[in-house]
Amino acid sequence: MADVKISPSILSADFARLGDEVAAICAAGCDYVHVDVMDGHFVPNLTIGPDVVKAIKPHATKPLDVHLMIAPVDPYISAFAEAGAEIITFHPEAGPHPHRTAQAIRAAGCRVGVSLNPATPVSVLDSLIDEIDLILVMSVNPGFGGQSFIESQLDKIRILRAMIDASGRDIELEVDGGVNRENAAQVIEAGASMLVAGTASFAGGAEKYADNITALRNAARA
Image 1: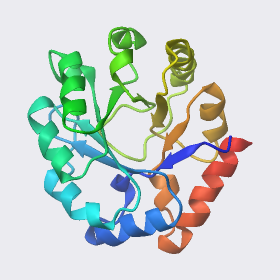
Image 2: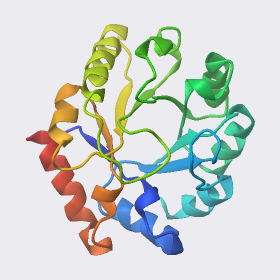
Image 3: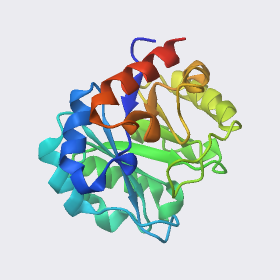
Image 4: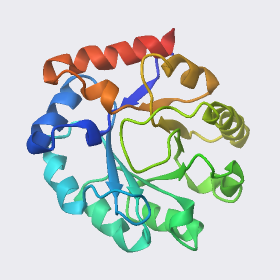
């Protein structure tokens, strides 16, 4: 499991020191920086916008993995791409034409991700699989950090791993929500290649970040 990737969610960072936090988590050895964008409409919380992404970009030595939990999504793609997103992930429920959204993200120069909520069926990807670079499985209902992992999503991860393998494409399978040292091995065994971890990454302050990320990787390899 040497290729397990870790994408710490800055939702668990100290927002008063966000630039320093991003720099510290990158120095600690993460693979991506996960940026949760929430609009208080598509999900029940408000977080950040393109200006914050632009502000943290100079502090990030790893790619910004920007998860848009907003609706509508299409009008904001260019702004997040210009702010420094390398990956833009959207929810197919966030607009009437997911295929067009995927094309717009690609045209903006970013890799394309699609996120599936716990109740979203994998069949929504049947006509999108050839357009995307990343699938994000939400193992909690989106909107808040610190929730518990929904066990039923392990079966969804297994189904998606088979779908990706059958496609022959190099698609990351990312899992977000309640991922920690106790369940990381299950998530990777089911077929994930990338873990989003907020609380598990940022616990204990900057001096603990490298240990936290190493512990997650070691747990995933168990």
